Length: 165
Image (cartoon, rainbow, N blue to C red; front, top):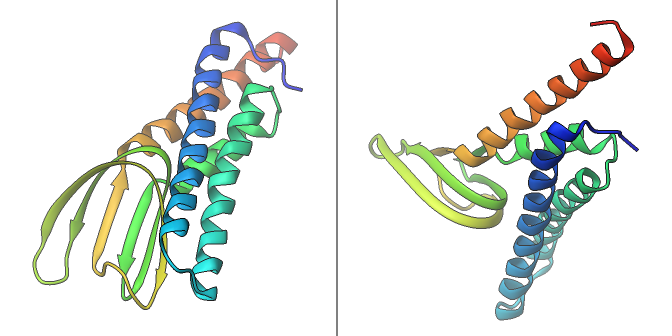
């Protein structure tokens, strides 16, 4: 159990709730999509991957809310997976647990700027999907930076508390 200083508790709890809600909404959306389509074995493999990532977001958020010392580094990993969404040469990867605001470019026929706003998504396609596109999730970038700063501030707090810093 991590003893988090009071000045950081509110931010950590907010990010924890965000990750839980984002992962939960993503799982609900994925379940709804599966119930409306006939699923093949190939789709189930990709769906299981999505469920694992969305579940990982929930676990990270739960850990932050409960003061688990592993939750902060795991949340940083979770947000890093959500920063870039890429579709190149028949490969497509999009993952976001929560809100996303994406800015990107498409570069197949012509160079074109893109923007997208949405809520929890997971797409993993091989040999199909959007080609020649790269997008960056601005919300994931902000959360990633915020989590890195929190990690560093908490580290400094403990160093000062021990008299090392």
